[in-house]
Image (tube, rainbow, N blue to C red; front, side):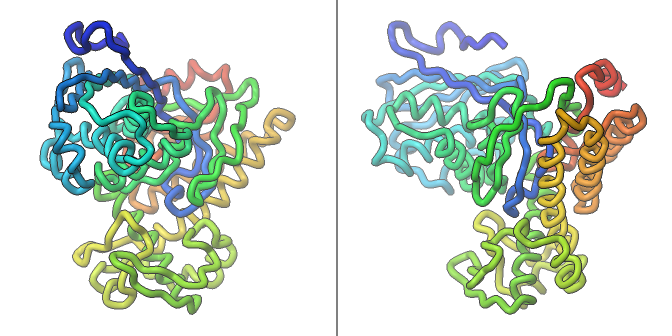
Length: 423
């Protein structure tokens, strides 16, 4: 990556602000983040760089170097300052070639419009140039790297003091409410707060960092691209997320918890699990709750009986059939798997044999993704190849339905991992 814009992009003798943010490898936790799970995430050595220069023209110019060419969008400063999340989302809703710009405009709105009282520099036009080595649609959080780097450089240029955690939360808000992707928080938190060669231990309730865990010497986590693209804006991910919140609403009813509607959301009262499926014990779920949940449920039937869900970024579609039981079961059991994986990781340096059970937990996580409908033939084959070559384990990452497979192996096994990737 050149890290340099075209020669005529910026003007001479004016400061250029620069920020960089990495992608991430989802080692354990994945889609359970929106249900409050513990997750373990690893920043990768691919990153997005955003460069910004203020100028006197009343415009916002954004250029991204993508697929070997420059993609450019422009918006008047006045239109931007009067914008709403919905109006920004609509700009490129039907323009796949420029939809990427919605992520940048979303974080700009989060910084300069939603947080206008914290902006110390008068509003003015600016140019942003973006270049990235994080592959898109591969499950390694290219969108989070774009958001975090763009927000960090905008905040710096306009003298807005934001902590790394605030950058992560604002980036997630922009992806949810402007870009229109119902992602959880783990991607942005890893990109903003992760540390090199450490797993970010994050409790997604909503985003509590419990530590940065060093990977013991002699072991490594690798990522292999399945060659299959995916997107959290796709129907499969959104369907599974919505189904999980449908399951939570049904569980609240089973447990006799009162609920009321507030706007587009349902609020559960006296909620002992604080809105998170991950806080339900697997034993209680299996013994008392699971058999009450329908395997599938039409959205219209659910709405007629339960009115709505507690999620603030997805809605139940009356005409869609949702995989309620498995989508609800996944985060309950995934949180338990991640807790066990984390405890084994803590003893790995002195008890290397626990790596076998860690690999088993990764395969169980992968199987649960597939049961939700988020697997793919390509990622299944990669996981099987890892097992055939006697590496510890592997699983699909992030939103599923393709993308990257995370592999757990010894450092000395890198040639085998490369052979699998080539095959």
